[in-house]
Length: 156
Image (cartoon, rainbow, N blue to C red):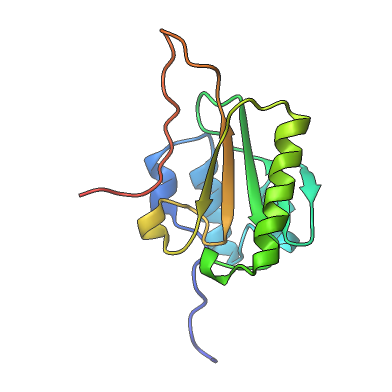
């Protein structure tokens, strides 16, 4: 509709909660540009890591701003601009599973956490409003280990 403001694709409030390098600064640039940073045609403008795996529905890349303490931190980015998991066709789920298995095998990941960022960022803690997942793996727990912290939502 003409004159309707374009939906903002990033949430800088969530980026400033967990500070990681120049990430919040990059998000402000994305807002100024008015683009979705996870849509494939814009990804390389803001994301410096190469695409490691590509399928019909997903791109997998290293996270340019990994959570502190991770051994591996990958992003799974939906190729179509989808904002919530309820809009994923069943073939897309299977496609993600295949890429996940390939990634785990090729990087010899012994344990990982998969987080999907879906829907309203004021609930999820996501900074980008485009369906994406995080594959996160740390080190084996020892007596001196510390936990990896990730924002996954908010509590009262």
